[in-house]
Image (cartoon, rainbow, N blue to C red; front, top):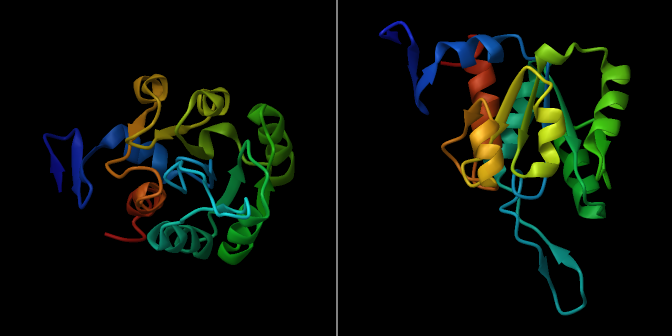
Amino acid sequence: MFFRNKYKRTYYGKINKKILNKAKIIKLLICDIDGVMTDGLICLDEKGREINAFHARDGYGIKMLLGFSIKVAVITGRNTKLIEDRCKILGIKYLYQGQLNKIKAFKDLIKKTNISYNKIAYIGDDVIDWPVMSIIGLSVAVSNAHPFILKKAQYITNNKGGNGAVREICDLILIAKNKIN
């Protein structure tokens, strides 16, 4: 049901129809890791080993997208075995670590997938993400993103990074495609 012909009511609240139309054609979701798939905190144990927490709902959302043949990629500035392991568990085929210039990784990803820019969504949280977010079809910021990204993104999640924000954009894409209600 559309509210005043501008919004659709979802379990994430009212979503602008323009956003849903953009989400409807998405064929690839690109995610940052720190601050998006995690809460952005980097914890070290007494031996200097990194510990991160990933939200199970985010993982399930990614698996749902993959199940509907929507590709998922990760482009992150960090480089850890932990990220590699998480992507492997989720079935994410496209992983770019250590990318301080995310455009370079993005262009390689486009060559591999041959997906046009307007059919790509990117979820990020900081200024390092903006160069890619500014040229794709649907730019998404987590609700606790850097203020610059919050001002520029086309959609801001209700959920914070590391707390279901990725699942929210996965659901939004699937709602727009009428795969879930």
